[in-house]
Length: 415
Image (cartoon, rainbow, N blue to C red; front, side, top):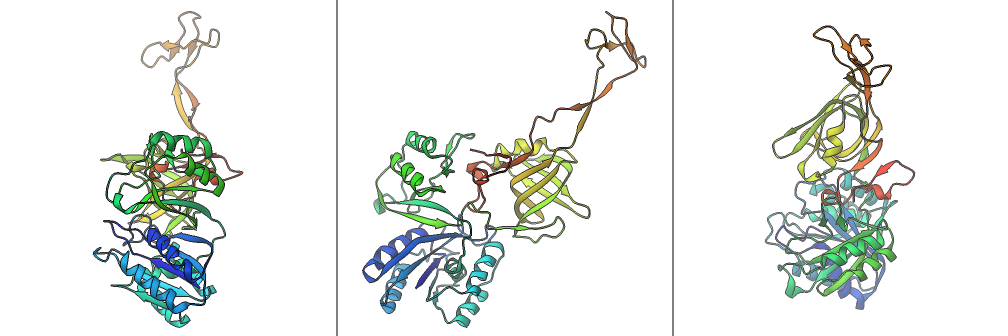
């Protein structure tokens, strides 16, 4: 059977991944967990999401279905924060995964779905489920069960002892930097080098101690063993769609929908301008339409690249459309436009810069007595390269594929 859970936490605390970890332990006497549990991130534009918009699913081999349902229900009731205004837990237990369930997952990671769409499919397929309060968690629970992962990564999450919940986390920063040095690029987004920050641990009151993301379970384990911290109550290695760009759709400038994420091709129409708070905006265009692109202040050093773009630069942009503008996650500079500048002419004999001979009289070299009519037009160095650029780890979305995972491309990873 396949068990899916979603929307059990709130902004105040608890965590759906922790609930799933506890439930798997409680179900050990009743069957066998098959493979790794799945941590599935859904559409990052979802209005009612908490933090990373994650749903959980795992496969259990058992012939004690009624007992499994009872334990799962009790665990959801015990470890969900029903006081949260937008906490609406969902629990799904399916006997198989069908093509319609997989299609539902693809929609849930790229679109905004309604609760009734999940309920309708659950009823039509005869899948056992329970929704609480508004039951919005049924969307994620069903999507997590149906998830198909042609590309995947891993995350090891360590959880705090209950007595520590709500208190500051005790983690030795030096050991975290050491773990990154030992295991990058097989692990990533543990620290942010440019902004001198440890980014793999939350600051909220939930049960998560920290999470290590990567492509190699062995490297992830090495990083875990290197890090010194307060004792962990438990740890779980998840298979996940994080870092895969699963939310990104191929699209065209002028043909996008709000709350969806795209890869778009175009040219810079207007250079970036800044507004209060350090947010940057520039205009991307194709033959028929224009779209405003945004690099907000939390993207930090990524904005330095955006500021260097000039009209005519050819780009691919990746990001989510919100209120008519695209919030950038990364860009691929395909072609740099030539930028010209007018310079003082050089003396053809001594190669020194000439000086003005007077208003309207051109330039002259006092030493060689040579003359020039006026300034010279010269192609200016752009001080940047083509290729992929991304926001730093401190601003990275869970689903966004880090450049360290791209092979055979011209990339400039942000660490």
